[in-house]
Image (cartoon, rainbow, N blue to C red; front, side, top):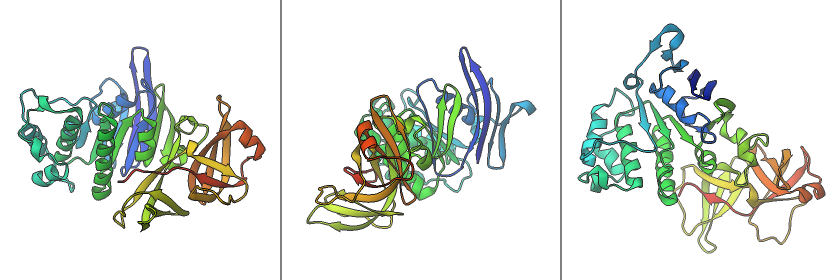
Length: 358
């Protein structure tokens, strides 16, 4: 586990947090600007002094200010990727990457220099000067520099917020693949709800310098008392596996623990690799009886867990398909006419499913 307890004050802002996150998978620190996300990440990295903190990773105690114990950043064996990476001026990309590689520690996740360059497609950039790189290229170089240092924990502070949506999706997918292949634990800071839902296994929700919620992403994403489920763009990610492809209709069948989903795609994908899909709450409608003669491909039996009225005359409904969580956003009138309440049996009509693993 990564255990943290910290109190810190900067002017009018006060951070007062404690908790623990699994030292595996992808953990996300989510919250609005000014919530203390980056400050907490810097504390974990050993870059923020002046706090009263205790931070432990596994069986190693990195910081305990009560005992005047402090392990410096370079001995914590973490990789860092910031929103705005800093490179020495005049350096070529290869020089930047070689610097990270020379800093590598003794880790089971140490990379061969050539293989990681090939994996991230950086070969053509090696002779380029860092000041000629685009935003997406800069972040790719910063990420590989951090990986070449063979970290045991990768810390990412809004690393892709400055790049366009297409580049961000590619970089997130590469992180996803990397985590799946190597099991490298990641702690990712963002204020983007879609990134949080699509990427996180574990969630730490910060508000005004305090922990609002901490736990498994699938549980917190559908908690109607929390901000993620109440947003207009609320969504749920479901992990699936490819089953079969229908080339005539251009659709593929994906299975998950409690059912199957059909998604549009022109060709089949590799089998045996988990594929995440994103289902937006606004793309889920509800019926009390099984619908007939509908164009919607995905109609699944579900039950209502809880629901909450929202200020815009909408109701957010937390559902379960078996044990799989789902959200629906319906009008207040629809919720009343369907007589929705906890325990109600319904049919979830899923109008759109977005593939996250392409």
